[in-house]
Image: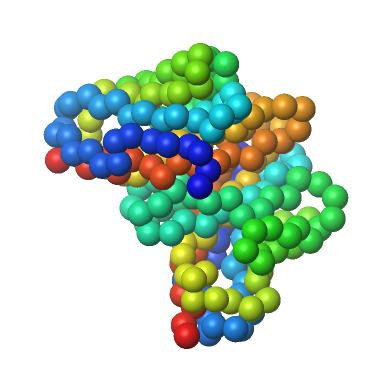
Length: 116
Length: 114
């Protein structure tokens, strides 16, 4: 079975400071990893994904994520946070060996609050 | 904008009723997945349709059913509604080719069961 953990319910950061949102995963095979962001009363917006290759993945709006196989982590980062980055962030994993189509398993989400 | 649309935006039903939610996939996408997002939680996979056939299912009872049409629009049907069915229902479309696909989500339908 595949699972995702986002250990922090909320992350507070001052505008202009680095932002990190943590994610760890568990799969039986090799993982596909995704980050999505959700603004109030909106669906999920795709930020970036890791499939294979370079462990540092760059995505939309200046976000990047680092895949660490030994620590089974896929932390989301942004060098300089903006107030407009305040939202709910979800990490998701798909197991390459999963028989359930391309089912994504999501973490519980981390609320990011960027203060001016 | 992802090009994935859902209707209606909000819906209120009473326990025991039936509901149909609709999704229109992004142009060119041949796969649609449905997720349930309860308040304060991450989305939970309900099922996926590929070329009009169910192609994977999560831990949801049979009263959750779906359809995918040739034009890649989709429906989620829920029978015998229960209070715990109150949630945001998200559809996501993607195109399955040789490699892993990215799912693009619609804005969701907020279902309230009273």
